[in-house]
Length: 150
Image (cartoon, rainbow, N blue to C red; front, side, top):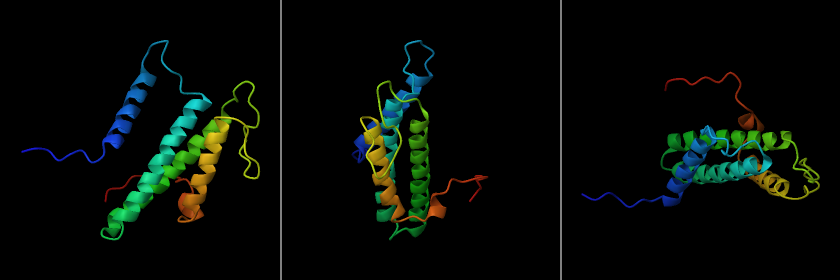
């Protein structure tokens, strides 16, 4: 019996890449990459934003035939947005790269220079997309949330 063809090779590759990166960060060598810089958080934000879009698409496709599964995916979609917003906030709490200007998100004015430009533009675009389908209460971080058995 043969196994079915892999329907998501790129998703598997992204997952493997994340696992490899996590292992590299925990390596006890002096040459291990340091995650605490703005470029690293910009890349992580891009990954979370892509995952956010994927979950949104999956929820929309699954919801009509399987409403309960769609609701679970919609909840995951919201949680990934919360993680994305937290990474964006962390980006802005790190010291700016020497020589960089304008590290604050100001929707009326584009931030100056990469990676600020990329993360802020991406975050603003993703924020507009999620606000069309989600209430502010849904987006609020969970306080005192506990996992409960279903």
